[in-house]
Length: 247
Image 1: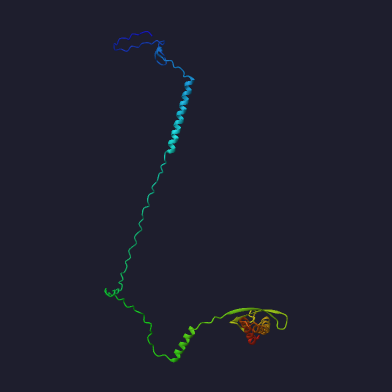
Image 2: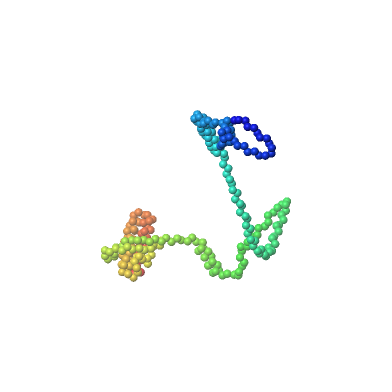
């Protein structure tokens, strides 16, 4: 470029035309001072990519490690305590003051020779209410002996037997009650309705049955001398002597 002489400063603004061959129109700098940018080679680009990849992996590893080791903080939310509700006070009810009877004072005991307080025993003797007759006393004593006497237990049995008709071949299933080894006459054939032909014929057959059993158990009792045989013999022989079919 050719050297240009600066105009003298006379306080006025001078406009100078520039030569387009000496200046870059786009950048506004002289053409002799503009730097030429060379394109980067392929080798430098590969190295840059490798460095960026290594830096990215290192940053990811550090971020993962920091996230794993960082303890999680549990947030505890404090619940507000329920406000105490005051129950409404009930109207005070006046209570009548009842004066209790004066408690008996304890009997002072001699410290040197303590003696227990006497125990009051209830009076069990009845006051005399006049004279009683000898007959009344005798009846009173008899009632006491009767109440104190041991009560006898009554053993009740219901016996079922298959009876043959007294004048035929028919059979009746009869039932009767036994009280303490004694056959009750009125209960014989109670399983049949009263005032019926079956009831009447059953009782006739029972009379024959009692006599036959009396003879059989008498022989057996005389033979084995057992208490059970003797009791059965007494049962049927007693019924054979007192039973009446007509009732």
